Amino acid sequence: MNAVVSAPVIKGRLGIVAGRGNYPLLVARAARKLAQDPYIFAIKDEADQDWSDYDTSRVGIGDLSAFIRIVRSEDIGTVVMAGGISHRPGIRDIRPTWTALKSAPQALRALMSGGDDGILRAAVQMLERHGIHVLGAHEIAPDLLGQCGPLGHRKPDRADRADISAAMRAAIALGSLDVGQGAVAVGGRVIALEGLEGTDAMLSRVAGLRAEGRLRTPSRGVLVKLCKPGQELRADLPAVGPQTVRNAHAAGLSGIAIEAGRSLVLDRGEVIAEADKLGLFVTGLDLSDMGPPP
Image (cartoon, rainbow, N blue to C red; front, side, top):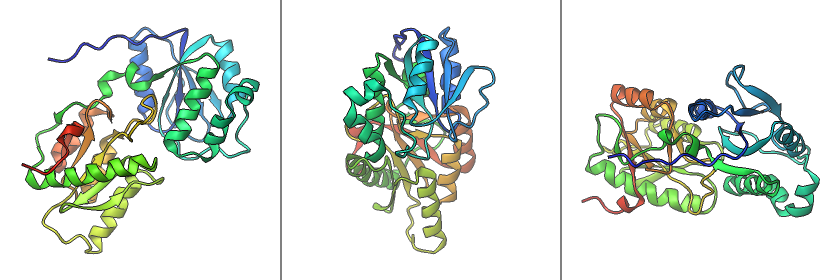
């Protein structure tokens, strides 16, 4: 039986800070199902969806001053952040408000020099200092959250579970350094860690290793994506989509494991169809699953 999900508390109008990919669009559609009229802050050089059906402004990634002006004029009281960001704000991109300069100077420094989670925490802190209620995008679109167990027909076998265990441990260690969220293990050995380049680029590296003959093992390997320990859950939850499945297949992997309840499955139907077509598993697991295979 599915748990009953309570409706999120949305104060004022809802604003969506939209980065790359269709994740922000999925959240905007879910917001409309909640009878909301979301306002879209499309990040310049990042947001790549068609927002013509929504009230939208394009804002620079660090232009807090312009962002707050729009928040006040549109009576926006709640904000969610969704979508990828490929470029960090530089010193020339930062346009702070007086409130941010006065009350959150450490957050401003974190925006330019912190790790990914540190940057997101700083962004949330500055929004809250301006009286804005910050929600996780998954609270608007809970159907995107991954659940325990396999999504498609395939399930991980004994060798896959050994790879999942190894990759989980590596992902947790990596996340504690605020570096990345994903790891790949093949034959019980970790062979790739996600860095600033992201999951797709990591999988491309794995495909290259396999093409070079450097992965000579009967085990095909597994991608695992987990939240970072202590991660700010209102932004940047681990996510997989159809392209992740295709890239995992190109890397020769057996499947993908994500953290149930704290990871996102984008375009779930297409993810399942691609995984079944390509013979991969996509499964959600709890951290209590970590350990040696039975």
